[in-house]
Image 1 (cartoon, protein in one colour):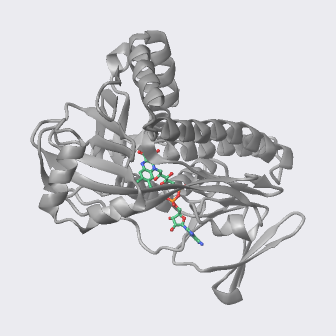
Image 2 (tube, rainbow, N blue to C red):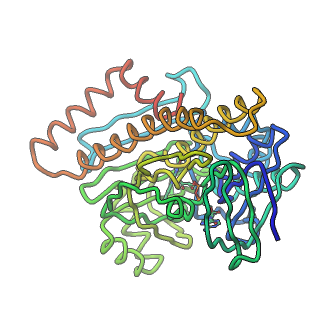
Length: 394
Ligand SMILES: Cc1cc2nc3c(=O)[nH]c(=O)nc-3n(C[C@H](O)[C@H](O)[C@H](O)COP(=O)(O)OP(=O)(O)OC[C@H]3O[C@@H](n4cnc5c(N)ncnc54)[C@H](O)[C@@H]3O)c2cc1C
């Protein structure tokens, strides 16, 4: 079987679904391929163990796609304050929405809320064809078209534009021989939902310890938070072995009882943390977005937001090309996308590396400078506002 499309998107995660919906605003025929089968289902009784801090810039993108209201209807959790402090609490910095003249700094959104709403919209889009449970075999590149072979060559799909949104281990990136710069952060992240004695007051909190950061992200109910604890793989393995009670005690202690005792612990999951940056985001007729192009330490909650910014810019430029009646997206258009997004993403990757080294260092002079720097910055409203604008994606 051979099928021709205008655009093939490989990967139906949050970024792939978003870029598909943005491009579906044209009259182009789009295929969206994913190796997984079913739509992630939302469970009102239980928070998804995977959540993301979503910036106002990403919310705006979801609003443009008219999917934000549906996400709100399922469940999103706004946060209005952020507290960040250094190991022993001598250096700290606080941010609040009112100082920025906004109602919230961002939202904690369960990944399966975003996936469910986006999937539903994709299913309803007349010009997107969903192909689930697919097994990709081979990529063949021609001057004006690419062919993708599925299921041992039974099916061949072709299109002049192929977009890789297939995550950190991107098949398309490898098949197109695009290299990456890769560095193991030497951290694993442990995530889970917890209940605490004290209410979180819509405040996202993060403690930086020399071993790695520990974040409590406020969920919709006042006593529930989603935690991200990044530390050495051996330490995370030890934490995973603990009983719920013992893990609660270790967590309460590591978080310096900021929200009182941790009284309930949900299922725990871990993720290895690796920095990856694709050497190229584009080739003629091919582009990478989201984790396929870059992965970053979750300490500032930016990975998905960067991916959504990739999706927004790529779609905007591609739609402009189509509006000029170009049958094929020009290579120069794809290069414009690459130049803009690669520079932005590289800045964020470097900033996260800087943070990790600064806070993962216990040398006394570095510690002193860190405390002084944090406390000084906390008093400089102008600098704080600049930091916040970057964090909010403004
Ligand atoms: C612990 C942790 C906390 C995080 N917290 C935040 C946060 O607070 N804020 C934030 O912005 N980001 C955060 N991130 C990052 C964020 O989760 C990712 O950047 C984001 O999910 C990437 O989305 P994506 O759609 O690019 O990739 P994925 O979510 O990886 O989606 C890829 C899709 O491609 C499909 N696929 C893969 N291979 C193939 C194949 N061969 N064929 C077909 N389909 C394929 C997969 O099935 C999947 O559906 C966090 C990450 C971690 C690990």
